[in-house]
Length: 114
Length: 228
Image (cartoon, rainbow over all chains, first blue to last red; front, side, top):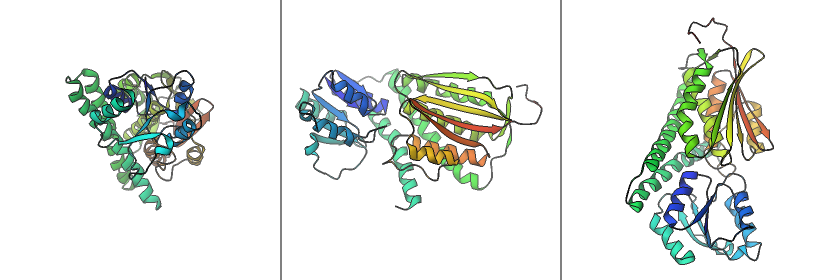
């Protein structure tokens, strides 16, 4: 299972389709946090500019629990992170919405949820 | 940062978002090897929304030139028109829209084109910020010599800073993307500018489970010559 967190439903659906795996889509971080109580996903695709708590608030929550801290996260955002190392948050990759491709999404899935 | 530059940045970000979505949709054709009707509809909806935003931005300049005449406008007809157009988008987003008309006064003093944009932007905001599987409610009612159009969504409450600006009656600039992401900052800014031009009162009410945006327009004293 993969979680996709993006408040743009169509973008979330595109990412979900590209994974070729079973996914759950969440429009905000709070819903996703609640869902983590029920099941731990193999990995998470996370948008940063979300309605309500943003992606970094979500990442801080994740790393504060021993079980969720280990989940690989791929950030999917239109923000430019300038190659910043975000591995401290469990981030294994950053995809820019402006130029990412379904193949890139799938490469991450093969590596972390294959 | 300079207020104007900050505003332009927000507008640029919001106009870029639909382009990124369109690109992903187009790429998914390749990925699935078969274009389907749902994706085609999504592409049309997203492009139309972006075109409308650009059109609204160009109208902002025309406000300064005073090119929008005020006239008696049949308020229900405008609401019907906008809701019909956005029905697909509500369905595609798995959200519903309920319409309640209780107004006896049918004509308001407004500019039809601007009023249409105000309602369109409020409804877009409701689509974006409502929780999945919830319904938004558009209500048109009489209120002390005015007609009030109220759009209620059920989702996260409006951030206090934007609420304060709405309470003042207008938004100074599109909201900083760091404060409020997504598609609502620019839309609310446009809606507040258009409302101000029409001397309409615009505002927002925060609820525990969402937000209501409203615009109040004076009732037209002119007898109904339009059969509405």
